[in-house]
Image (cartoon, rainbow, N blue to C red; front, side):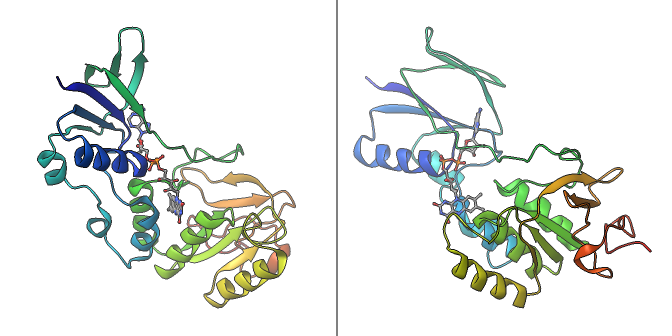
Length: 251
Ligand SMILES: Cc1cc2nc3c(=O)[nH]c(=O)nc-3n(C[C@H](O)[C@H](O)[C@H](O)COP(=O)(O)OP(=O)(O)OC[C@H]3O[C@@H](n4cnc5c(N)ncnc54)[C@H](O)[C@@H]3O)c2cc1C
């Protein structure tokens, strides 16, 4: 008799789980797959080539609609699971409940946003999924400046992609050198030089105090009081942004 398997999250981990199950135990489970994103599994680590324009979303899809249909996976995409009742063995999706015999929770992680004033302003974008990537691409189409807070792997991939799309990018990093979890100071220095050659401005030992703007994020203010996007006044600038795009400094 088939067992009802519910999987929450159609990401990298559950993609592999389902592949293995359909290969090794094809008739054992009747699978229902929930995903908060309105799509199935794609190769999340390839979002950066999508951001930079080297690849399209279609290039990085790992499991398309046909694949799920072929393996009789019931897809509930664009639907959050909001409750799990382990006593009754039922999960509640936004569009209704599903009972299960076995449950896999593969919901990944949520991006951390530094708790500074202005963090909820429109145009503050996290980097986790395709919607974030598309939001950055749409923003980059208008040109202007971008500040990337965080000079770790994801921040630098975002910075490189936005620069590739023509934005003037400044990376604001809290620590003394880039990617300090992976690189020593010398390697961090070489990486910085390479990024600067691509036109990206790097500010290390720079702590973000606030994100400011009226209807959208227009500038970042550092603990030192500086506006790191200043082009006219150099790194010591404390001017407010010159225009609504946060582009450069006012007089
Ligand atoms: C741009 C980028 C580059 C990366 N590069 C690398 C790399 O080079 N090397 C590396 O090792 N890792 C990299 N990572 C990290 C890697 O992508 C993650 O570690 C991996 O995707 C985690 O897989 P997962 O299946 O646990 O979660 P995810 O792939 O995040 O999938 C989880 C899914 O669950 C869904 N979900 C969450 N909550 C619910 C809910 N309540 N109901 C329904 N669905 C829900 C989410 O919408 C999501 O689609 C990168 C990540 C990003 C964003």
